[in-house]
Structures are given as structure tokens and as C-alpha cells.
Length: 447
Ligand code: 2M8
Image (cartoon, rainbow, N blue to C red; front, side, top):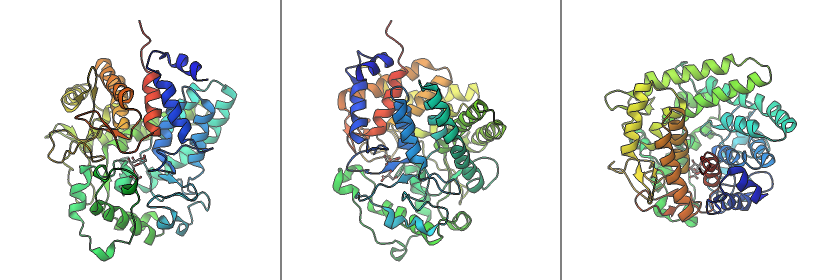
């Protein structure tokens, strides 16, 4: 199958990259789903799995479908798609005993899950898996099974997280952004007065597994744990959380991914003869709200907003280019953004560029510490697709070449140092492998 895969990707000359990516995915496969990285993240993560399925969509229909099915097995009765589906008996903080999602009548009794969400890239993933499936009968059955679950997931977001009613969806925890300790959240945390007795006791495991210099600080974990306790104390009931949660953010990346997922959902609804209009309308509304409420014309950038304070979050993150992926900017705005992206990105020798998670000139920039500077594959994949959809194929190719070069040289790491290119964080990282398979598939065949 491997040789066949390399041919399918047209990349047999890529230093065996497809094979190496598949080896990582195989090593992290746990029978029904894939762990992001064996020691650091021994459960199933929501947006990681969506990206892993995107990678598998080119090569292994069965695995791609199974990955997504397993994730949706953790979906709640109210549609919430949890950010972690737990495996039994694995060391990770916070595990099921900390989340206590059994306090919610909506959470499944089995499998155990967390009680928050992650960026909604799932409909895009399911759609790609459906489109590329070779066994069409199987693909049809998969679509029929997943479509109502995806609709319930989006309905949850538009029902529970749409405070203003204009389609801009809010997140309630930094983990919901997927960018845990990004400087995006510093100002939000600075506003929250946290006394020691509000922080539940907990023990971190991550620092025993990877270099602590690349992890969030204890002060950040205090906030993470405090917020989980706040949900737990409200039995994961949306209304009191919406009323009391001090962390409420309109995030650019989350909403941009949602726009495209709505479009994918509309396309899938049309395939089965259902009405796509609800999803098309949501795509339009959320795209319009991004342009109206997250474009800061003074900064010439898309910025997150702190919903509680009403203030802009004045941090230019690598994720701030995501509206290109959503296709929401006007051609003029897109051209402006593309020029900015060029300056923001870093060179990867011998040829290519990469988007760091934070601008290297930013006073908060740290090349090693997690979401405060390193190059993340997901951020680059979003920027790559955004450039492609906006017609900027050359800068897109530069990003693709840069990412593939980092992986070729260093292997499949969680993230990469934007100054040296060194692989960092968790090793043998599954969504890095998945997204690279997708970028490889997007390579033009050799002339
Ligand atoms: C990181 O987040 C988890 C919490 O969800 C953690 O630090 O323990 C983030 O990079 C997140 O985006 C990712 O999905 C997860 C698993 O790779 O790790």
C-alpha cells in the first residue's frame, strides 16, 4: 500500500515523506483512532483528528472514516463536540476525573470526554474524506451517518455561542482556540483577578514528558484549571457559563474555519438532497461578521476581540491571516493581507517560508514556548489554503515548500523553531503527519 500511496500522491521523489508520515500515523493508531503524540497526548483530540483524517483522505479511506467516527462517538446530546475523547488508563492532565462531565445530562456516559470544544474544521474534513473516497458506496454510507452529527455540532455553536446573534461565535477557554498559551490571551487573563483559593488543586504531567521551556507556565495552567472548575460547578450548562465565564473571546481562526465548514456542510446537504440554505446563510453571516467586527482598520489586521471588555486584542498572531482561508476579505483587503503575510513569515533554507504563531518582532515572541512564536503546521496549512483560494499560488507554494522542508529535515514534530527550524515539543506528531500528506497531495506533479 505504501508504494501505491507514494504514486497516488505523485511524490515518490520526496525523500520518502509520504511513507514517513504514514509510519507516524501508524505508530499513533490505537485501534479506532489516533493519538496526537504517544507520551504527551495519549487520547483523541478533536481538531487533530479532523486534520489526521484530511491526511488519510488521500490514501486510506477506511482509516479516515474511522478516525472521524470515533471522534463523533464522544459527541454530546446537545451537539457539543468535545475537544478530547478519553482513552482509559492514560496519564494526562486534566483527565476525566478533573473534567467530571458526568455532571452534565448531555455528556455521554461512555466514552469519557472533556467539556469544551475546539476549532470547527470537521465538516471540511468529512467533506474531503467523502469526496476522495474510492469506494463510493462506502462514502455514501459515511456521509449519511456523519451529516446529522455535523449539523448538530454546528447547531450547538450557533445556538449556545452566538450571543450577538450575528453569527460571530465565541470561545470560553484558551483551549477552545487550540492555541493554548498564545499572547492573544494575556490581556484577557490580566483583567481577571484570580485568588489562590479559586484555583482547584491539580498536578501537571506535561512538564515531565517534554521540555518545560516549551510549555505554558504554571500561572497559565492556574487559569486553565480555574475555568474548567467554573464549567464543572455549573454542570456544563451553557446559560450560566455564558453569564459567568470571564473568558469570552471572538477568535479570528475559529470563526474563519467555521465559515468554510458551513460551506462544506451545505455542499454535503445538497448531495443527499437536503436543503443547504441554513448552512449557506450561516457561512455568509459569519463571513460578514468577521469583516465587520474583526477587521481593525487602524492596525490593518484581523484581530480577536475580548467580548467581556469589548476591547480589541492587539496581538498579531499567525492565525490572524485565517480570513483568507474563509474567503471573506475583499480583493483589496486580501492583497493587503498577502503583503503583510510575506513580511510576517520567516525564511526556511534552502527555499520556502513559514508562518510563525507570533510575529518575530513582537515583544512577547518566544521561539520555543509553544503558541508564543513557534511554527505550527496547522497555522501554515490554513495560510496555504487561504493563499490558494485567493489566487496567490506562488506565496502559497513557498509556504508549502517551507513546511515540507522543515519536516524533511527534522521529522514530524509538534512545532518548529522559527529562527533555527529545529523540531520542538512533542515528537512523532500525528496531525503534523496528516497535514503534510495533504500538502504533498497539493504538490504540482514534476514537469
Ligand atoms: C494542545 O492542547 C492541549 C489541550 O487541549 C494541551 O496542551 O494539553 C494544543 O496545541 C491543541 O491545539 C492541540 O489540539 C492539542 C493536541 O495536539 O495540544
